[in-house]
Length: 379
Image 1 (cartoon, helix red, strand yellow):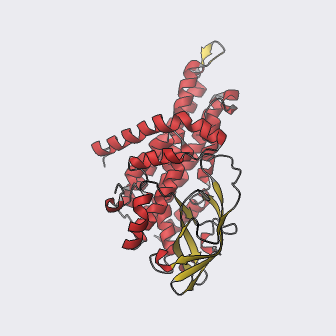
Image 2 (cartoon, helix red, strand yellow):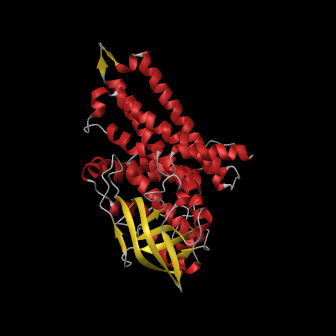
Image 3 (cartoon, one colour):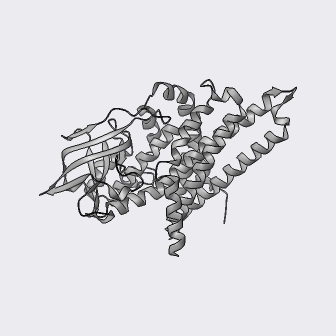
C-alpha cells in the first residue's frame, strides 16, 4: 500500500494544476456571471489529452486509469468546478463509445471527441425517471436498419451545444434489460432542445431538456447489443461518480485554502481570527474531512482500475462521502468569512453553489446509500 504518487502521476497533476491556474481560475467568476460555455478552453484541455483520459490511444485517447482521472479532475476543479465537471461528462460519454462501440463506430467518433472537435453529452435522466433510472420511457423502435426514437431527457449538460448524445432508450420490455444505448447526432431530424435551465450553479455549462420526435438513428449507432444499455450506463456511472467526487475535492480544497488565508489576515477583537481556538478546530475538521474524502476517492479509483468486485460499492461510498464533505467544507469556509463570504466579490458563494449539485447528480446520495446497503446485504 503506497500512498505516494508515481513520477508520471505527479507530472499529470502538475500539468492539470498549471492548466487550472492559467486557463480556468482567472475566468471562473466571469464564466459563472455571464453563463459562458468556454468551448475553446475545453479544446485547449483536450490538446493536453484531457478529453479522452481513459480512451484508447489508437483513436487519440490518453489510455490512463481511473486513479489518474481522479487526480486530474481534482486539480482542474481547483480552478473551476463547473467546467471541470462538464469535462468529466464528456469523458464518460467518450469512454462508453470506446468501450462498447464497434470498431467502425470508435473510428467515426473518437478521433474528433478526443480533440473536442465534437462535444459529447450523456442522456439517461428523464422528467419522470430520475433516481429510478430503469423506469425510463424514451423508446427506440426498430425499423429495418434504423431505430426511431421518441421521448425526452432531462437535466442534460451540454444540451443544444453538444454534437453527440449517448442516449439510453427502451428497445424491449420493462426494466433494465429492455434498455439499449444509441449515439444520436445533433442535426438529426426530430431532435430538439428545451430552453436553458435556470440553475443555482454550474453556470459555465448549458443544461436543458433533449426531445426526440421520431428521430431516425442508424442501427450501426447502437453500442453493444440490444438490452445492454442499462448495464453500460451503470458501468459508466461508477467512473462518473468518482469524477464528480474528485471535482468536489478540488472545490473543497480551494475553499479550505481560501478560508485558511482569510483567518490569517482578518482581525476581530484585536486579534487575527486564526488565534481563536474555536476557529482553529473548525479548520482542523475541514482539513481532516478533505483528506479522508481524498483517500476514499483514490481507493475507489484503484478498485475500479483493478476490476475489484467491490468497486461499485467503493465508488458509491466515495461519491457519497466526498460530495457531502466537499459541500460542507465549502459552506464552512463561507461561514468563516462572515458576510463577505455571501458576496460575489469573493469566490466562496460560487463554490458552494457549484458543489451543491454534486450531492444530487450521478445518482443522488440517497441512492448511493441504497447501492452500498444492497452490496453489503448481498455479501
